[in-house]
Image (tube, rainbow over all chains, first blue to last red; front, side):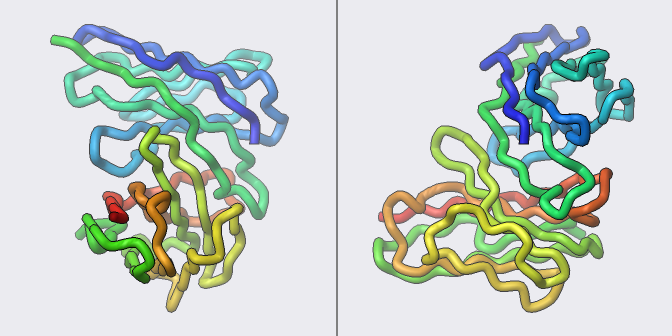
Length: 113
Length: 115
C-alpha cells in the first residue's frame, strides 16, 4: 500500500471549513484514498473514500488531484465535535488483501470556538 | 444495538498470563479484523478473517492467536503476555474484502495493560 504524508496538527475555527491535506505520491492506479477519523478514546470512524473523482457525502467532501498524488478532505462547517485525529489511507480496493491497511500518524484537528 | 462490540473494555493483567478479547459484529459482514494501537497512536492491522478463514496475518508473534467460531465473531487470544503487549486493541468488520467499497466499522477498543 502507498505511503501517505499528513501534517501533524491543524486548527480550525468553529463554523469554518476545515481542509485537511494528504500526499500520496506513490499511489498506484488501483489504489483508493480512504479517510477515517478517531475521536479521543473511541474506535476509528469511516468518513469517505474515492478513486479519482471528487466525492461528497453527508460528512465531508474529498478532492483528489488529477495526478492522484494528493487529496484534501473538506469538512464544510467544522464543529467542536469534529476535533479528532484524521487518517488518510491508501489501499487497494479490488484485491484479496483489500482489507489490509495500516493507519499512519494522521492529522490532529482541533476545532476552536 | 451496537454494530461492533468488544469485551472487555479494559483489561489489566500480569506478565506471563494468558488472556482473551472477544469481538462480535451484528452487521452481517463477511470480514473481520484485529488492529493494535500503540502508545504513539499508530494503528496497525494484525489479522483479517473472511468467512472464518484467515486472509491476512501480519508479522505478529505466534503468542497471538485469532479464533473465529463463526463469521460474526473474531476473538483474540494472547499467551504469555509481555509488557510490550500493552496497547489498545480494536476489532473491525467490513462487508467484503474484495469489494471496492470497503468501509470498515470499528469497535470501541480494549485497553490492555500488562504489569
